[in-house]
Length: 111
Image 1 (cartoon, rainbow, N blue to C red):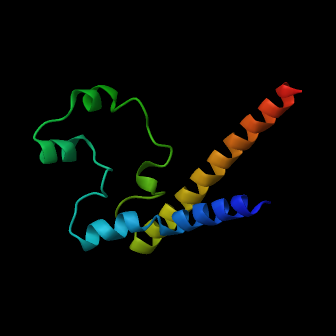
Image 2: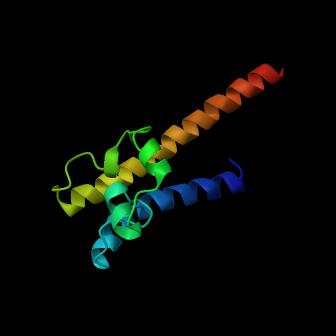
């Protein structure tokens, strides 16, 4: 493993460990949602309307782990934090696996 790869993995793991800030900070600052994670209702409150593209494409994709939580929003904060971190690690693992498989495919077909 090169130094760049090691630093990349360290950065990715650090981001996964810091991911619970997404649920801690909005509560600390009395915000309803994490910045940028707004649904159509929040967008309507913020802007006064829902952008046409958001209406049109909002049902196109459903997250595999909605709200990064394996349970309900009524779960304890500790469980929500652990869920956030597990979601982060699963995302990193899935992305790394996809990149690995694509690179293997490209290397195999390059020869």
